[in-house]
Image 1: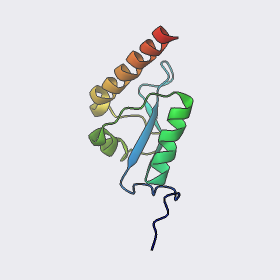
Image 2: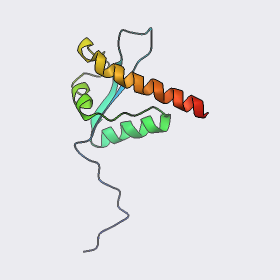
Image 3: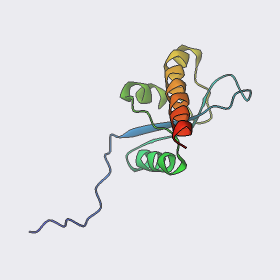
Length: 100
């Protein structure tokens, strides 16, 4: 039997993604706006890339954040970890602005 090299790659069933949104002045903390695993995680990552949203990979943090509900604010015990993400996004935005 020949392998079909044109077949779409199969999604990784254990891949997870969580999207956060933070608008200063619109709440106390970032909010979970999307989460999922497998193909849903891939769609979240694709949409982020298409929209120019910085992506940071941190399996431990995704594992913790994926336990939160949609539209739930990040709890205070995770502020330090999420602050690292926001710092990453801020630096990415600054670099993008310097290039453009």
